[in-house]
Length: 238
Ligand SMILES: Nc1ncnc2c1ncn2[C@@H]1O[C@H](COP(=O)(O)OP(=O)(O)OP(=O)(O)O)[C@@H](O)[C@H]1O
Image (tube, rainbow, N blue to C red):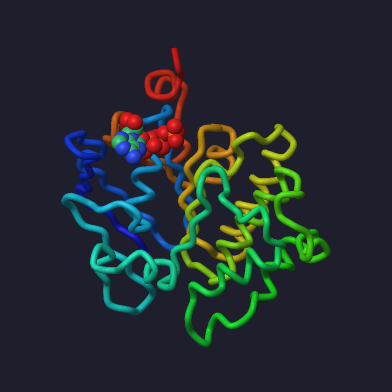
């Protein structure tokens, strides 16, 4: 579905991503791990087109369709092509109602396929349906995270990118979020790229992992290979 090869990115003179390779096969869930500041969000910003890539390639391919050079697609087109994004910190419009937040997200679709909020959104989040006329700023952390997810789903993405979805959540809510991510991946067939500090979540829902350290992928593979020595070397903060 998405392949990155030798992606490099700079903030001014600072070289942030170094030759990053990543493959996201359709229907898989991949966790991106790393200590704070190691380049996870920068990588996603490059995929979404929020930041320019200095060198390397990004190829998007859907079943039976010819591959597309993602780097040639403007930011708005990437969302329409099927890449959904839930940013860290959610960034919902707190003065607007739940429904207004969802309708604004729908505007980005700009075509006949995206005229109404798809039924699966309120099926997944029945609470949001009953509260749909409530201002988003009045929602709990969990409900706000659900809204951020729902907003990314209104354009019915094929790839969903989640940046720290369990941030600020209790262990119980973390488990609920894990269930939801698993459902989106397993039952709805979404390909998922999950940036997550909590190893328990990655181990539970991801098939593959990519470990970033100072902007380089120092390890990647099947999530079963993510053992304690690797965790101690690259993830434990001393
Ligand atoms: N706007 C910016 N201008 C300059 N440098 C930046 C900018 N944003 C991030 N950086 C630097 O890029 C590096 C990678 O940051 P990034 O936010 O991608 O890391 P991260 O792994 O997502 O961290 P976190 O887990 O804290 O979100 C860091 O050294 C950071 O200081």
